[in-house]
Image (cartoon, rainbow, N blue to C red; front, side, top):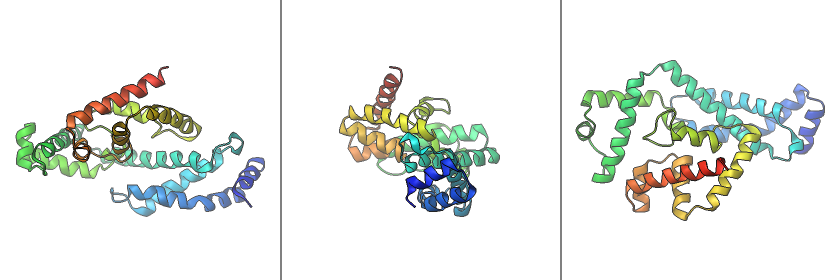
Length: 244
């Protein structure tokens, strides 16, 4: 039976058997989507279980009459649950907020020093740049490994939990689920149509691949400040489009 026919059958008669048949046909999506989150302190089997449960939820909520592809609908649902799992895990570790703040400043300093020296800075150099002791820096770096979700949701190194990074997460659809995610993707495409090649590259590297400012600047042959300004311009363009 074709995929569309299966979904119509399930909509008309939502039996567990039909639901499970659809889920089994799409479990490959879970395997693909969780791979980018491996090596962050969570076992494959745990992530697979989270993704599989999210897939079941997506199947149960999907409406084939809306004209969307199931993969487009299910992907943000699965990714959203994986990120939520990491956030819950982070919360359970109860990493002190002060340690998180130091880790963020250390990372920002590392990026700046890398741009200046064209190599990874030493702990001593980071200490001189930030004013933190070497012991504090080492503790923060070790702590940041423990709550590995920092890189999952942060898009800017220098913004807080309620800053502009969370604005983009909310309005560019990286955490949205279902049909809202699909509708929001139209806004992304519309704004990106007006981007220069450089802005497109920065957007992709920062928001999709979570590259550091220093790394992007090095690849483009520009200063880190140029990348930082471009990020803020990108945010402003999304904000303007969303408030029209």
